Length: 188
Image 1 (cartoon, one colour):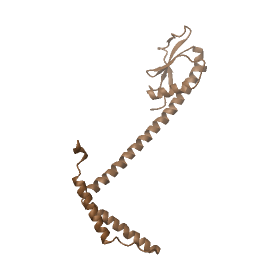
Image 2 (cartoon, rainbow, N blue to C red):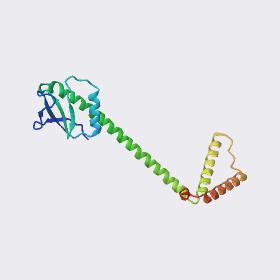
Image 3 (tube, rainbow, N blue to C red):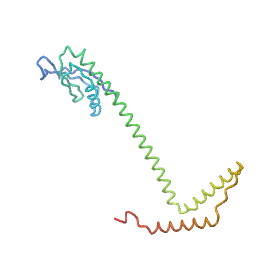
Image 4 (cartoon, rainbow, N blue to C red):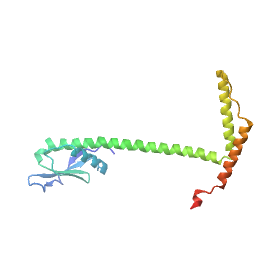
């Protein structure tokens, strides 16, 4: 949405005011019909300042409508309204930009989570996941031993056969427990 501005006075809609017989109700045409958020910002700015010559004001159908004396329009009402419109436009742009960046961030977070879930799914579906994990840990141990030997440190010993058999036993027990476990959706 582009900035909103006053573009015309609708003379056909101008009427006598109900407030006082010497006043008029003017309809200032806006360049676009503002949404409720813009109107809230417009009113927020107007309520933050006190101006003596202000009378009733409302926004309807793309018009700012207000009661006034005609000689007060140019020196008082137009500058006052333009100040409120400029504030509402600026804050509205900031609000839209913040919402746009939040939306982008949510999309990025969702895409990252989707990638993580896809990787997790591939790992779960892989029947040889245990072999893959063992190969990765062996490769990491080899790399760390090579780096340690280059640095002059003592090499890290490879895991003993006893430790490997204990790992296999724990993995087998874990898998058996997972197979026997009832699914949460089956519990009702």
